[in-house]
Image 1 (tube, one colour):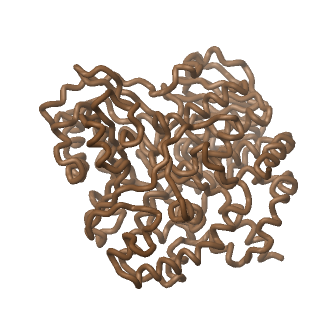
Image 2 (image 1 turned 120 degrees about the vertical axis):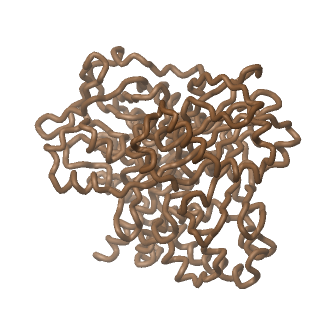
Length: 592
């Protein structure tokens, strides 16, 4: 019985990992363009890239004096928590320091002198699947669950391929990557294809276990007997001991499947690193479970949100507002108030306005910002708890280029919407200046740039060390020189795909680890916690302080859009037992 309970706990962890795949988070670029290409005469006028129909408020003094639930921070996790809390009937408000909602997923616009129209850029997530409203949703997909629950659609253009530029050559990735005639066979031959088949067979029962229970059913109180209990028959036939593997490093599954081909292992390392910021020996198996299915099941497609990733943010904001929730921008929270061992509200920086939270305060801040920046009184928490949170290992940061460039429709048709690049597998996927990810959403969405132009975003996948940046003044010449120096690798990679990109470029912005710290309030510009599977685990949404809940990438289930959306659901489910009724109604729609 004890073994079976442990297996169910493992399954609950796995169920919070979504079928929505998204690679890499990043932040808003700095305001200053890179002066590299003589033809670029750029005037940057940065504004939030969002629908004019949204009614978010930038004056926190207009907020009511009290709400049932107050959410601090409007990343995807915070917005999902607010959406579900509002759906459950709680009077909810979100308070965000930045001028735009969405955290890493907010977009921005820029203009170039002499060009009529906006260049709209994604700042972060750009690689999605499972979002398309015209494709049946999977109940294990938390972001899609939230969007469907609040009646919002994100229109998407589906596509099936992306580019690979590896030491072995240039390839086009398809669902047949590991099948006959696919990339794997072309590089490593039949034996590698056989090993891949073995791995996919080994993953099948784990993928089924991951899909057995909707994230929306999970909660961490007695209400779980009603919400999660009804789905227990879904995995009654699964092997409880096999399910325990979901909490282990993915490399354990790779090894047990007999995968020894070097190229295959390198590819899996890169996939893991793009998803979690860690290679296969540090990425939890559950996180790869549905991703492998999404990439390689017959008919698998990827989604390009029309209007960019900010369209997802807009949809969440619309849903929150239409249900009566409020979102306040430029509304910095100085303190989360704790009285008699309970989170009772917040104090805003502007005019010191106090907002009561009668049910809960949900923090979408990183673990280091919550417990290291004075927003909560750490003395009311157990000393060991605070130390463990502050000692959470810190992931590295990024370098970015956001570029608006000249490109005809026919030229864009020759490009892939995404490329993965690596110089030298032997250096490791986590090595600095060795790998880059490129997104060209204009390949599928011509609304993002003026006619005859396109946008792209190229970045290093969490391999940039913050130490070289931390004592530099952003306004100094030293900073400008370092930006140019550290962006050279990205230009080098980009020119392998678009050789004359410097001549085509009309808008150029360089993002650095200081950009992450400035715009996202991210500790050391970090991608997120570098918690290694098998050595540690992400904490659940509750804290020792009653009514203070967590969501985002510093808590269970972890990093990436899929995980943070799930964390928002779990936080909303943890506010009080009053949510059990509306939660059950939602679950009935998922079963129908």
